[in-house]
Length: 103
Image 1 (tube, helix red, strand yellow):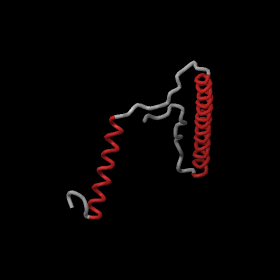
Image 2: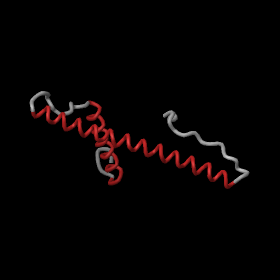
Image 3: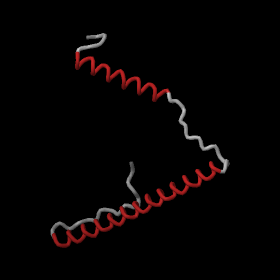
Image 4: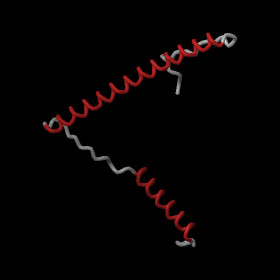
């Protein structure tokens, strides 16, 4: 993940003058806070947009303009993952209670 080009740069701080360094760092933290606030506003805007688009999609489905089927196809990867999970659980139970074909 690269650096955000809008992120305010860290200021050079004169450590020989603690009071001035404190002010410089405080101003930097304020700029960071403003940047985070702007990112939060963008995220909130995207959430509103997504909600609005979802409502429009639902209306279009009700009007019969689109097929709004939400069923996901069966995934070979998902089936494999579930089978491996069950195999792992069976192995743990077999070891814990000394039961099963390898007990």
